[in-house]
Length: 326
Image (cartoon, rainbow, N blue to C red; front, side, top):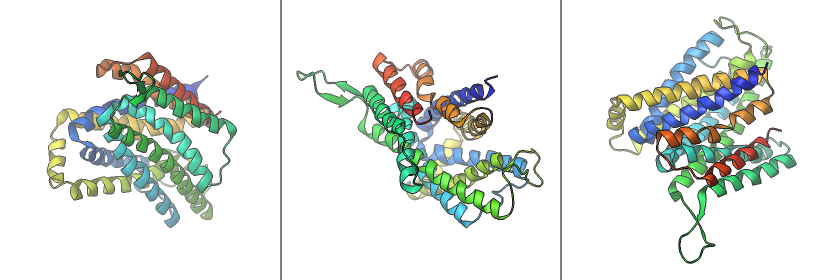
């Protein structure tokens, strides 16, 4: 009973751990070295997973359209989105960084309306307003001057920009992934491969409906690794030296490993499993609890002062996200 709900809650906890480890690692390494190493580890885990569930270590049966859309999704969601997220962690921390990730839901809704013609329900529009209101409540405060009604950002503008871009890119990338998965399903259908088919040679007998998302994630990870590595060596004169220095930082490397395991590996796997035992709406609602769950550990581990206003803002923002899935 409630197995799917418990797994979905575990996913939210797993993503909370990912954010905390990523904050420590990115601050020690820098955003580009951290993401380059993290994406390398992710690809290793994903390649192993594909070998187990597809019988081959690469995205089986993916056609040109699938590759195009998923590579574009990886460019937006991983290269741009994850870079901005880690930069956001550096400037404003993982707690506020995760709060801005709630922007992914309204972004996905708007992008889905434009690219896929998906209908936007009234509840989703209300959810957008509530989500933005929660974020505003958390990051705005009154000045201490004579004009008590004037508001200002209590966080660095650069950090707000990066974190907001991360949330927007994740939502945009999610819709592009959905387009890519639609092409993947069409490619399988053309080969008469049903969704409940177990791939030939697979060690773990999982249906295609479960193994294909792992293949899609792998395609996105390819462009993620290439993009981060190119950015590292092209935009930094000592990019390779930074990478070697980062690899020699044992504490930072443990953070990269933990962030990779709890995020792309365990987190993604468990999220797929959760949707098998409960509805997608309930699962997504529980996944969205990360901005609330991260408040206490961030305050304890990083000695951050958390105000009542910030807690209420996070709750309001997550409530807005939940309206997208009711």
